[in-house]
Length: 71
Image 1 (cartoon, rainbow, N blue to C red):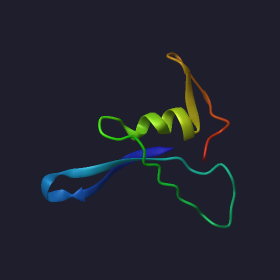
Image 2: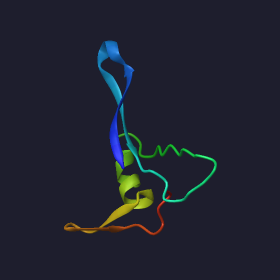
Image 3: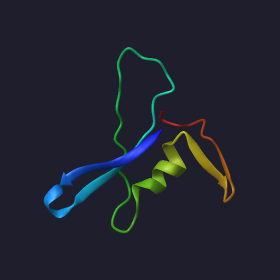
Image 4: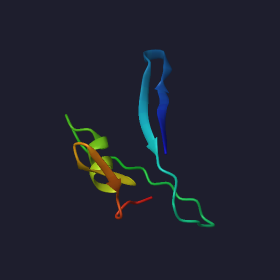
């Protein structure tokens, strides 16, 4: 898993944040899923961390593996 920023408008210092989760399945066809959710005032990271990421929060002090992950 890694994360970073993609430049979209260098003149105005605009970037898009991304988080990459490598597939845990071996395949002869690499696949990429772009997860965009949220809306005005809501971050896509909420959906990523609570729905599709390889790990999720069990409580405020514990992170567990997400068996329903899309990776």
